[in-house]
Image (cartoon, rainbow over all chains, first blue to last red; front, side, top):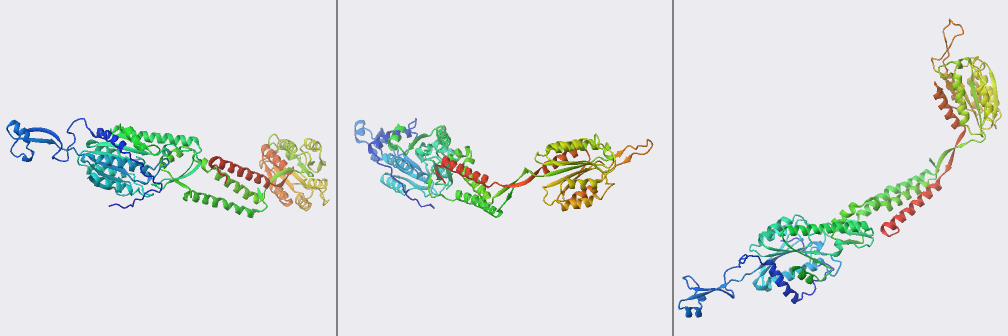
Length: 302
Length: 314
């Protein structure tokens, strides 16, 4: 049940072209991301026919007769069955921020556009090789959850949800990220990949649920930033309003001291986020609205 | 400070109204607000900077408004200008009781010293005369700008005889041309220590002085326990208490003030005050221009601060 209608932001630019060749390249990188050191670490969705031969062994009572291998039985003289490695289907959960602060961008596109693009890329990678993709969108009232689905239906559902836009101004819930991560931990039964796409700004107490997700899943944190958020331009007097809390502030950006203090504090804040992610051993990727985010994503995941 | 048009001070009510409007205006959403997501960090950065400079232009403009409102009321200041055409008479008692030593070193010596201080205080343009009296006014000097003459009269007194206050005051009035209705502004300073025991009633002379518009400032010198040694070696010492009631009456009738001095220091400070009071006159001067200039300076300061902080003029 959701209580807030989403609306596409006015300055929406869309994620831009998603070049298939770049997504191909990312496939490998993400595959490396989810590979653990020990084989068999990740369970398959179930036993079943695969494509890869595991072994040939003599028939035992109870084996499916359809698995009898004719050639091996003829050569050995005793019935043999052929066993396959089951598919290792991967479930990817995408936790994406829809809070009003995502509808901000001063360069090529909005933070919400970059987040949408990143979510689409990870969804497309997720539905390959019989994988499925689930989505948890937070920051606009109660979290919206799309259950994991595979292939086309999964892609369509994700695409439709992201096309709705973000929450309108005036929504502020500092616990939204923590809630969404907790929900992801409860919903994701099988070990899989969890991609958290957010600006990690004005969110509280997300470290603990992220840490508990880390126990079972591979994690990737995608931080979306805008250059203006870390560096104020010298444009004189500004009347500013926070899209989430509605807090107002008038500043004189002509003051060098203020700009330097702001840059210093913002630098420290981002260092703190990065340090926290490093401490939890979560892969951290930062995408900015003023660059080719897809290229940058590939560069950082490589 | 006084005001020629105090009703204009009501314009000062603009100041609290302007403060209220300023506070409300800061709360109201701005027309050109920009959405910005890093407000919390920015607020921290702003909090580290001194916040009063943000309000400096508004405060300066408000100060200018207040100062200009005061200027509208045309403020005046009172100041003391030395009097040009004034005459003073020092009427000093040197009766026998002035030899009493209850005021160190003696009443007469203290009176002479204090009178000298008084003369030093007077501006040169004031004409000064002196009358010394005991049983009768025996030394007199008309009011002249040469203060040395009066000083000589004061300094050559010696204590003996009775107290003829009435005649001495009458002589002083005569020397000040009290009868002439166009006499220059004048005043008498009477110093005495005892009840008048000879001559006419000093209070009636004081009434005459009031008619002549000549105030008589009186100083009663001595302590109630003041005594004189008896010439008879076996007699008891003679008590010579001052008579402050009579002195106060003289001063009150003539429209002046009475003082009591029980020590040389007190006497000296009374004379010093009298000297500055009688030698000068209170005048009013309009200082509207000062306020206007201050208001303009504040306005220019407000404009400069506004341009500096926000790049706008208002």
